[in-house]
Image: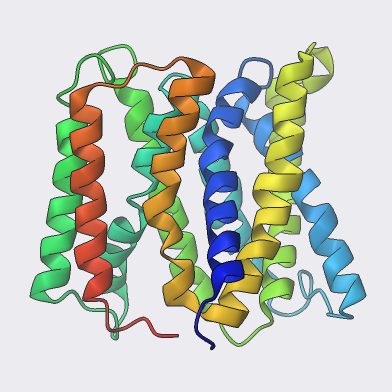
Length: 295
């Protein structure tokens, strides 16, 4: 892996902007689309550039070979379920709050990795980072302007969505020897298979009359925030390594707040800003002492 240059940092910032902007687009999409249908259309749009990439690079898609069960399980837990849960949660909470809550995924993942793996154990300083990060989330729940009786459950649902991401990430380790493009494409195809019947049976999307703004947001989520963002992420991973790519976690909630405030007129309180600083501090301490992750 080479040292990051200006172009690499530019790509990292672009990735953070795209992912940070996904939350207010999810919010707009929920105005017209039910959560399962939203997730379904999103992964359908996302699968298109992935299939094209595999075709161009002549990478075999192994979604339905002898390892199909792992691809199916990861597609369900790492894509289908969290996409639905995040859509449900974001429909009732501020979009920037969803971005902040989702930024704690590395902290949740560290706890699960400590329990279920042998080489990702929590040290004292990593544990301190996790505790500080989650204390920022606790502070958010004391802000009745942002989280109250009406949306308390939806904030928890959003956190649950991030937890499924973590579980899915651990399951993905079972396919660590497979090509990244194949794994991502195969699991995305399985997420389509899981979401399609539930969307058709439970939400009857053909009866809906979506607005243009919601449809454009959903198109953006699929093609840009999922498909294109994955390609940028993959380029960063292959050129600069995982450690550099994970720095995007610091930027996503910041851009989420900017977009939520200026584009969605969402209220920002001092507790929100304090929580953001605390959470990012916790993530920084954790990553600084995460010797298990290398370039």
